Image 1 (tube, rainbow, N blue to C red):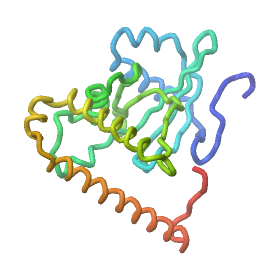
Image 2: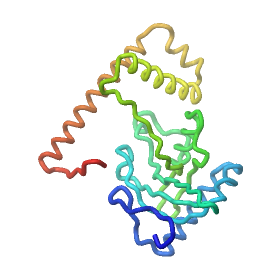
Image 3: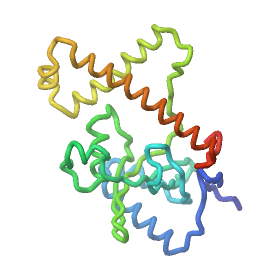
Image 4: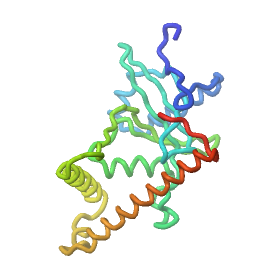
Length: 229
């Protein structure tokens, strides 16, 4: 736009606000706090880019009603970098499992991802907005998600996919917990395996019921839905 790169408004997923200069400077100030949460070698790479645009972004089902925006950066050669800033709230497991060691929720998310992932985003960071106390975490916004097409897949394809998911989940638990203690607790019998299968079936059924309730609510006009989002 006017010779300057910026996000294209596609409401409701992506939209701009009428940013006042003070608001824009506040975003810059908060961005500097996120930079301070990164390792020094990662800051060197990030410093090659400058902020050129900010827009609000509607996020997925698990993050509905939370604050989220995206920031566009450009390097001197025009290379773009897009960072996503997401609000970090308390874990939904906290009422049942108790609070974790991190009082700052952005830190909880960032350290949790670094602990469980094989290789975390190099720009994964966090900050807190002192003006309202809202905590955020930051990461790159790559369009690289992959979903396995289970519909019509052969049984051996489903089996391979299940093994892959199980392997990744096992690795995450092995990194974040005591692998020997977990293996000793599970033992060599199959009660835990059966419990996981039973839970998975119940969870799938609950998803089906939730979706049917959602469709019914759309059909009778209780809520509005926009296809394709």
